[in-house]
Image 1: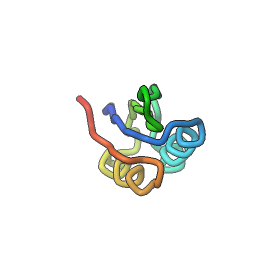
Image 2 (image 1 turned 135 degrees about the horizontal axis):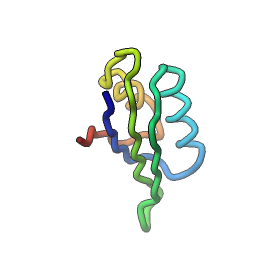
Image 3 (image 1 turned 120 degrees about the horizontal axis):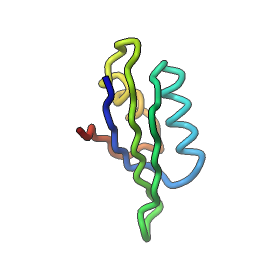
Length: 78
């Protein structure tokens, strides 16, 4: 099963590495990643498509991502 998650995060490579590293440590398979800066802002939109191979639950992925300081808003997109 695949789900798409859209996040508003701090702009920069460090944030991307932090989020992707967290998801890989939690054993989620990342299918795609797209990060676009928001014009005239220090934020970026981060879109991640996840596959849950081990039935860990997408809610767990979202809860873990919410704990990161550089992630400001998360929503699931269908």
